[in-house]
Amino acid sequence: MTDTPELESLHGCPVTWSCGQQVVHPDREGYLALLQALADDGFHLLVDLCAVDHLTHPGRSLPVPPERFEVVVNLLSLNERRRVRVRVQVPEADPTLPSLFDLFPGTEAMEREAYDMFGVLFTGHPDLTRILMPEDWDGHPLRKDYAVGRIPVQFKGADERGMARGAGS
Amino acid sequence: MTLAETPRLTSEAGQEMVPRSRLTAKELLRESGAVLRLSEAEVAALPEENEDPSEDQTMIINMGPQHPSTHGVLRLMLELKGEQVLRCKPIVGYLHTGMEKTGEELTYLQGATNVTRMDYASPLTNELVFSMAVEKLLGIDADIPERAVWIRMLLSELNRMSSHLLFLASNGMDIGAVSMMLYGWREREEVLRFFQKVTGLRMNHNFIRPGGVAADLPDGWRDDVRRLLELIPPRLDEYDTLMTEQPLWRQRLQGVGVITAQEAIALGVTGPILRSTGIEWDLRRDQPYLHYDEVDFDVVVGSYGDCFDRYAIRLNEVRESMRIVAQVLDRMPPGDYRIQDKKVTPPPRARIDESMEALIHHFKIFTEGFKVPEGEVYVAIESPRGEIGCYIVSDGSAKPYRLHVRAPSFVNLQALPHMMHGGLIADAVAVISSVDPILGEVDR
Image 1: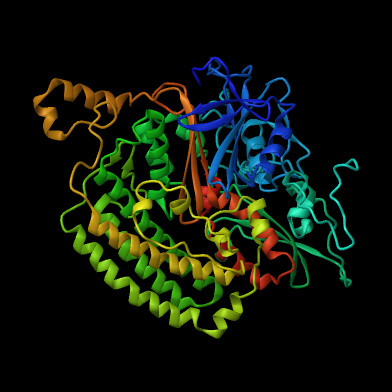
Image 2: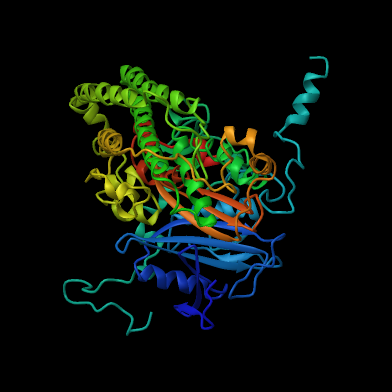
């Protein structure tokens, strides 16, 4: 957080600095436009996209109203050897965000992971399915209300096969 | 698009650059039809193949997860037309054990034991990126003792060598040069033997920790490293004779699995795959960390973006790593191997016997761990496979609130369908091998 009363801004979005790293905070409506503007600025490599669930840590200081979910995008400019991070707040009631697939096709797997782990929906994604968990899994494991070890290990069809083999084996 | 926005056209063609934000996936990727986007349920619902396959019929088959060339448990859903691969979908998740979730339950001191198991072929790189991220959050990243920094460099370069030697072994095996498999494993074992001497373990070392490294280098480490530096170069020359100069090897790899620089950047691909397309990008040189700006080494780049370039880059990166190791050998300073900040590192064993405070600090560090100020940070370094990044969100407690590892293999796998598109199924094996994915970090 900056101590100056006047916040820095980039393409109309407030900017903060975290451990010497530049962080931009767009709102949901301005998210895609900001990413497009950053792409034109030379940030051609989208390095990473991940989500964070702030359910049990709501009181963080942000220049924008905090929400439960946050999607974090790390961008890299190869020419300027510079990084920038984008953090966008996603409300729990409507966890949707426009997909970046058309702008950065490399987000396909990353957005699938964020959907799989947090249930954030990316509109316009070509194939928004689970990527790490089985397709028929319930819940989103990295959410804070998904307790560790709550659900036993599940295997598809374990019941039927177990029944067929019988308990005496 | 209004008229004013339209790129001005001449009789030749558009003469102005289109802004990057206007390009869509269709234009960025050579063939947008390379990725197969079908779910399990949709595949199961597909009609059975006809008894009499007509000319244009395609077939969807699974390659893996138990296929020997898929490096662990990668499954590829391939759409084939005869022997030609049309579309492909990498299916991952078989090794998913929720390591990012586990990371939220472990203290920062224990965290390195968790992340080291992600990319099991280069565990020290994982520990290093995690430790650097924690140190940055603590604000002690500039205070790490010199000796610790140089030890970290020594180990991460040796790890790059062992990881690339493993690649050379498995690549040889996949292509059919089975003797290469034995040679690669043999040389890798020499490096792992040194790791065992230093860290106590061949893999999953938990040696690089927040604040420095776990222990000082053992007596005689210089002789061991010198022995490695003498042993490996002639062996690499043998590989050149065995593979690089061999026409069969070249024909099997050259022009296979081509990816362009534009595609690689659009897909977020990093590491040797990005460098094989001619982009000179190596975080060790371009965003130096540790003391990489003080050592002399070359960034190896290719020009064709094919499997052969990726093979040759990795082979020569072993040589470059050895150059760095030789310089580290000369410059290794004396001094402490970890920061003497009693909040972060446990006190020396001898102090515990004589000081009550030392005993308390020791106890507190190993039971509660140390608290890290609230904040978030992303740190990236160059792993043998590309950019490995660690994103940590701290809520001020002794455990990370969120630990995310940007695994290079996870992102690099997305390039597979584009590299395979239109190629033969026999080349698919070469392509998987040349991407060098480690499924442990893909699935985490």
